[in-house]
Length: 322
Ligand code: SF4
Image (cartoon, rainbow, N blue to C red):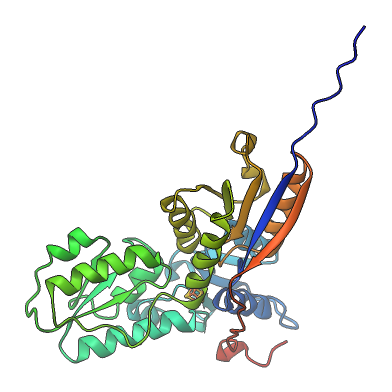
């Protein structure tokens, strides 16, 4: 009788992209809800308009601790406390909060607030403002609300080329904070061709966290056979990370958590690049590494492309509450 040894599982390298996972805006927003939930003697519910950040695990964790997530403010009882999500809100939502006498804790990321300010400034000087972004995204809806009559939303170079505006000499652009760097450059290029006097923001609207995570995941992708990005399907920056890797020619998948790994993806793969979007908790990355270990021995390396040291103050109403 011959004995066949058990097939050895292949060993792999997991190449962690750094930076990855939470950004300063997401940490600030989650922290704001936690401060309210942990307030001594709290009895009233803490309402949160929309997902505080686009991550299923974060939202479920806060809901389990007592946060009540609502889609719109009419679901919040008058006089209650409500948190606005990191993605920001339109002036119309702020007005509705005033009408309902709500106490607002505004967890809008300061880098989204900056885009809102630019929208107000550009439209106030008479420009048509072209917002580059994805229709239906909460951040885009909030920004467009700053001047609905003077702003246009586009996503592609083709849309830029076909734009008609009242005065082609008075056009400026802004972008959603979580777009792909390469695609956005193409759209801005097409806009500039269409409107040679095009004005833009003084700095890039695509935020530091989006930029850093895209560059980091591209760096690991250069050495990887497969890239996994941890994040929720509605997380714009996470989806963009997968897309930029695929455009570079490396297979990539978005996974909500370790349960999303399809073993078929790992066949023939020796180096797995791993990152997480700005709204994905770091412990999910650890769980993915552990889950990969079930498919064969893994050696973990980290590739750091930049070190982040950004931190934002908590929103004023919860500042000073530990
Ligand atoms: Fe702010 Fe950028 Fe994080 Fe969005 S991804 S919360 S804009 S830092």
